[in-house]
Image (cartoon, rainbow, N blue to C red; front, side):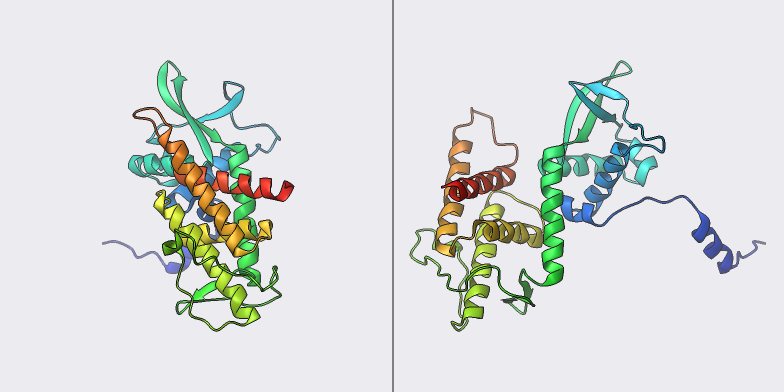
Length: 275
């Protein structure tokens, strides 16, 4: 006859057990996926110094320190199956958060991985800024099909217009709200968010919609351009991405067209700022 364990005993165990993972929610936002975010959290843990201030990483290759893990190791680390690990690493690499290489370890070929510092910091800052802006209400949140700015002053002058005669205006959302300074700015935010989202999805971007739109609005905010001028830069980035893809050798391809598109877009915005 089994003896029932009192629930209080479980609660005591729960409060004292060290069988935990320090998992920050921002890693899910950065990766755009729960499992990938958990893997990113674990990768960050390995990059943190130990209690003596020394690196946990021991494998050196090509001037970098690497993590070496088998597909089956992830289950012991954070309860991720080999199949989930394969998918998660592919997502993290496509997002530019990590770099992977196949190399020998103890005489056998094994996957080496490390954080791509430049890409990681860029997405971390972008995500952190997006969370802050969304919390303060400076970026619109969709409600019943409309975009609204929840509080605070608009970061741009409200007299923005959309070039509806652009040959690719099929990507622009239909705007039916009345024309007031507040509505005009809200409309412009919607146009930018939907335009960039549509093109990014066109290139196969699987990141969450909110993540893509937050990134688009952040870039637009930095550009301080009217919607019509910013839209031209977006279309130029789109054309450049297509052109570069077309110049690849037979069988070749841009590793991540969405990432390349955003890189081109941000580069064009920087060039415009200097001009």
